Length: 477
Image (cartoon, rainbow, N blue to C red):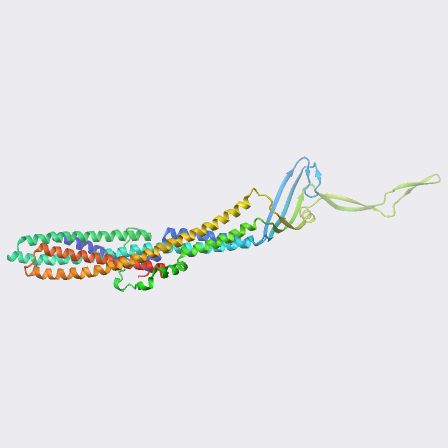
């Protein structure tokens, strides 16, 4: 038995030494670390970034488009000369350039509503991040309180072992003096073994709860870890009168991120509905094209001469005389046209308006519009469902708080009664008026009452903190 106690003390001291070398974690640090490293939070953040990019894309649709393209071709057989736009059978190599683009001028508010829908969806995605953070915070807070409760159970079990050990020392002396039978010593040794086993169980539960908390924080299981134990009685708890379920529900409708997200998604669906309706109407756009082309067989004048050829003869008498025009003719000499010269000479510009009237598109626009109606209706129904669930959770939490408070108050009275019974029993045992068995029964009743009070207290704290959370106060210890 002494060896068993020594082993337990050794284990406890080793744990304390290992934990003393590690950083201590309070609830705020745990929550901040979990939020920073939790995969669900990271995924929600990525989704929000994707939605933000979609918003950026919709905003960029407001600006003109510009595209540059060039084509090189080897033309054989009968084809159209890109520089003269005439048919030719000459083999040639051509290259064309074009700078073109356009801008949407009017489309019945489709672009405006699409941007508004994307903005609302982005805000809803941010609310989803907040909801995920809240879910992680609640999970971490629950594990954190479980660790604190397990730690307190270790303290109670340690006190129990020390008390039983002290009683065993006194009883041994009395047995050696012949004042008590040896059975009393054997019963206390058996109780010490039970208490030591309870201590080991409490330490094991503590380690398991630490592992659960590490898992929620995504911390390696081998990393030293110790939580800061706040004074449970000093944890601020709001009065139950200020946490009436109807008041909490009305506040939760405006503070809970799920409800915020639902409201934003409904507004986004309304804007999407208007945008898809606009797609059924004509749209007006402006467009422009700047182009030029090159042909390796193209020629251009490279020189000229003035000539005055006769245009006929006149016979005067028996003599023929040549007839010349009043002005000379210009005769050009041709050579291959230069690359940049052709691009300059063939440069063309075009600016115009384009009216697009949807007549029949296999029903795609109409079906998209009808789908947007259903999407809006579904968002409204989802909001109703989430509100009903929220209200049910709040009322359930309130009932649980009232019940846990009653249980906690009852356990306080139970501990007071068990403590008085144990104090009387110990005095009677010291005076030889009570058997060892009856003392052990009284002691076990006190331990059970203390453990139950501790469990009820932590249960009450967590449940009232949950109700405070619904009110929009967050999780604070």
